[in-house]
Amino acid sequence: MLNNSLKKLKQQLIQCTKKEPADTVFKNCRIINVFNGQIKKADVAVSEGIIVGVGSYDGKKEIDLKNAFLAPGLIDTHLHIESTMLSPSHFAAAVLPHGVTTCIADPHEIANVCGKKGVEYMIKEANKTPMDILFMLPSCVPATPFEDNGATFDAAFTKKYIKSSKIHGLGEFMNTSAVLNCESEALQKILAATVNNKTVDGHLVSATEESINAYVLANIKTDHENVTKDEALQKLKAGMYVMLREGTATRNLTALESIFTPKNIRRLLLCTDDKQEIGRAHV
Image (cartoon, rainbow, N blue to C red; front, side, top):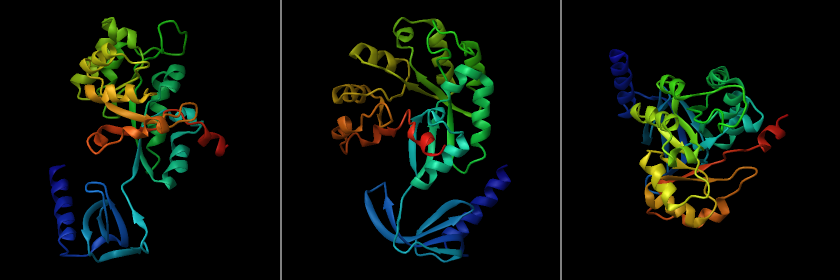
């Protein structure tokens, strides 16, 4: 593994420093630099799928972008692919052409019906696509203790499965009362994710100062249930990453767009959550 990595790094450095032509060079680009907010006209050199240089490069294969804009791929930070009525591979085919190259998916809908087999199907199907689809382990299966559904992901299951390299983190924790009431089963799930260095997503509706503090204390990092400007700013102030949602049934972007500032933009994320039009458009 180390020898292969060393060989690959050496090859990338050789092409980066122009000792030999890069594998592929995108010529005549207008590059959107998200680090400094500037647009620069230059070439982009790629070696074995990795960008190794921006500037003036020659390539074994050259693609003239004819002054088109080139930007990093967009990331949908929270969604349920099942809501689109598409499989992961068909979902990728629908959104990749629009620049969405990565998404973080919570398959809690299929998990509530099919359990572990449903989650594993989604992961396997996603591996067929060139899109980066990262999966969260659903945290609330069933969504509430009162539901009669197809599966149960208890704390014991979560402790075991959260360790998988296929799992990016713990999905939206919608059982707010369990956190506020210190219920052991719920807290064990959160702790299992935390000790394995996995992210925990939130789902905090009608948040209060008390509930926000509780979620932050429990190491829940993000939240997409932001309807009002004040609610979003309170979560930002407490240290959470705030997701600005623009889905089908719930559209919050217009109400929240004014909270963007140079000081907080690094903690603001975009997501769709539930988007149904994609599936209807591709039936």
